[in-house]
Image 1 (spheres, rainbow, N blue to C red):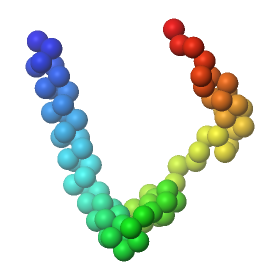
Image 2: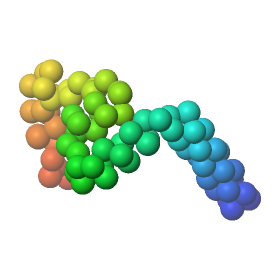
Image 3: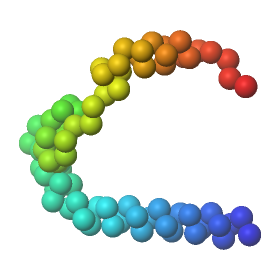
Length: 78
């Protein structure tokens, strides 16, 4: 029972990944070419080469978010 459910989840994730790679093949190839040319890319360059808008970083938008995440680091978990 568990094995068949795990297989179903893995197969669904594989198909989703394959679809995304196929639909974004041009972006994947642009990233591969840029990496061959430059060897490394920082985050901003990777987004630019792939043609994706760079998502905003929450900690840069709201200092309270950064403070809250700093306060929870190292805190004991239940």
